Length: 388
Image (tube, rainbow, N blue to C red; front, side, top):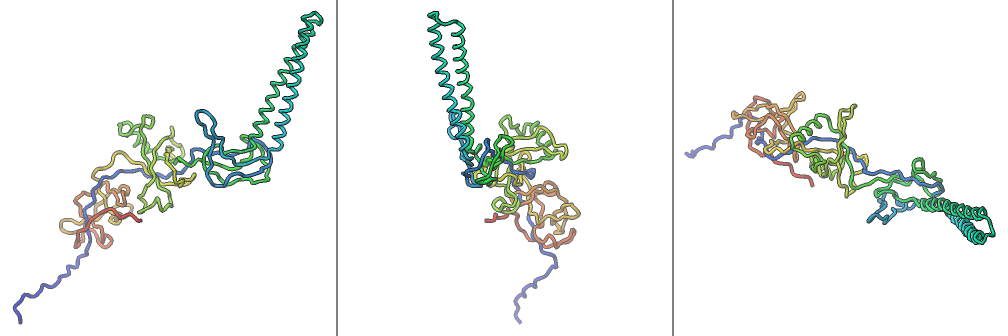
């Protein structure tokens, strides 16, 4: 037998192994979460102002069109053509009106010649003053007829122009509601709707904000921590598209589109107790579509400089109450009731109930009970890696 020391046997303590870590301490901004709906700043039902057959559809359905452009107070461009209404009858109306002008002009020329001759005769004493006055009156009537005849010409010209239906605004078209050969009824309000155009950049998002949040922001305004919009200040608002994978990278915490509140209603909705507010957002990728729902968040005051963050997996829920299991100095489990805040980059903010020195159980939470001794292993809490 050798005299060397025997190795010590491995002793199984029988304690559950858990991983613990102190909360991650970081700068955190609190937010109010909102659901909003996208609305186009401009939306126009395109109607023909004149009646007739559709001769041609001139736009590609669903694509962008350009509306009227003014440069230095001048109409530089009238807008992209959308529909051509058969112009034959309107061209005929214009020719008839122009022809009538020629008739009126000839009558005026004759009346002036007669007036000149009557004046010569009157000056020579050959004709009476009454005859001269009659010729003067006939000249005035002929001139009035000529002036009145300009109205039908202007109207006929405008109707002929209106047979080419143009885009009234810049935006994206819907489908053509009527195609070639169909009859349309003209009119600015009761006319046939041919298509719809909505503006696409920028876009509005409307939110309904509850009265408690409204009161919170009002206090911030009163305390001078936020400036009203009419004084040059804007409240930031960030959104993500519901169901869009690009706007939902690494879970539900990615708000990739940034805008500002530019309008708030002057009264609460009596049925819902909410205030309608509007954010404005750039839409260069055209992903914001009218009536699409988005998730929004608005910052609540100044950021917390020392926010305590833990993974959601460390939170235990019992009958609507939230707890976090921590390991005490005696390595026994303690259940601490907590108040939770929003997610921040994938970690949950703990508003009350924890200290920065608490040893939070981050793995093995479901296997332990309060008061039970455990075998803790040190780990760390960090932000989850973003999904590619």
